[in-house]
Length: 366
Image (cartoon, rainbow, N blue to C red; front, side, top):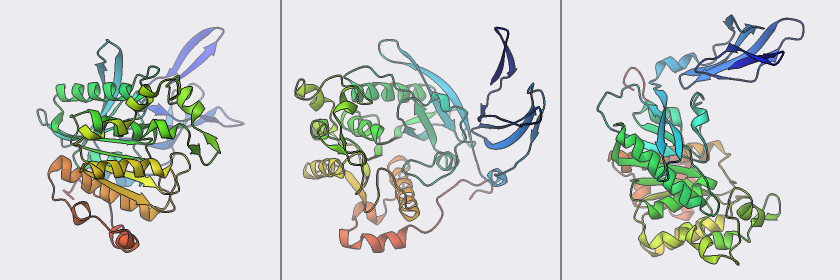
């Protein structure tokens, strides 16, 4: 919302269940340009006066949304075992009926509850197309994670399982049809959860630090820095190094749990990743393949930490859709999942696979 500070007192000018974009005031008029959005409302431009008492819409940039099933998003509460309160968001399809349990995809990173009113712009990226999945009848849950020091991946596991159980207890999710998605920092968490949890029917993740012991001395190629500061003091939050506490780094590494893992995994990594070495993915894939574990690796040449080329983005979204469709909805597995694609056939297969729209749920039943 918007508030005015006047002589030490706060006056509420506008407070709605919406997310406002950064306002821009006209230079010579008492008019302010601002965006307003929530899950169902595209962030069009609006003009208001200095008191935010009247609003005039000036754009309608996405009229086509009305043709599709869009759903809604709610906020829910859950707790960790020690009583720490957390929140998450849950996007629910329009077609959901009371008592119906649906397949669910969990997407996590650090904090997501602040995105309750964020509009899910449809896009081809390295993560699920949120609005598209909800349109097709999936729940989409995004939980907050409470981090301590030294237990980053364990903290992810605890929070994600607690949030997932909360949505099951609320009666929305089918406990046998839940998928997990993460990338980079949460890609490592996704790998760790895949090796420790039995709650998920499938895990899709990418660009993940898999072996924290070897990763510690590898480089952020883009900057030339190693991972020492990142792992000890930064987002890694481990507070020590593998020479002083090898067991900690090994226990928090996904690679240490591969022997017990049986969750199907779809793994994405760009071969020119400047942030997480591609060899981390290679170690993950080779270990799981050696042990006969269910992993599919999508390795994209000339791609970095995410996917920049449109053909590769479309390719990944199509494969992700089919991967979750098979494991969460029982749809037939396509040949690329059961037979694989030989390295020498990758370019030809990409050209033949990528074209075409990603699935959506239309109001006419499409």
